[in-house]
Image 1 (cartoon, rainbow, N blue to C red):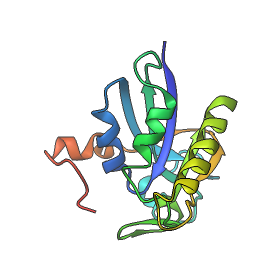
Image 2: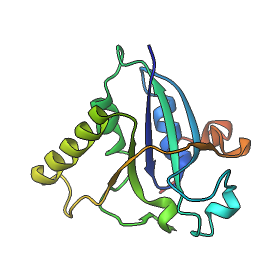
Image 3: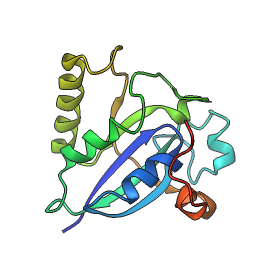
Length: 157
């Protein structure tokens, strides 16, 4: 059995590398979601005019890892309190967003954000959007497993 999770947390290279190496994750793919242009290119998304976010689509085995644990990982690999940016990357394409694939994922994401806000773990309010998944467009091949191919573990952010 396989399920999908789709997260946007800034540059997709680091997010993909983190999830690529997470136990229970079957495969990852960098791409774009949430915009209004069909088949966007990286260059188009970088104009901040297509509405897409850089995302990682994760295929995972729910018998090995839960969606909640994936969410917990997501909130450790980026700063969910920064609006439309991560580190030096600025623009709506770098927004913090969870694209849900089922009503259960939506509820789990909303509850996780509520609980994290209430916990005081972050100094500021979480700005992560929770949106229904739309068409996923894979990024160009050179973006796939980008850090792994270069022997890096993070984007240095």
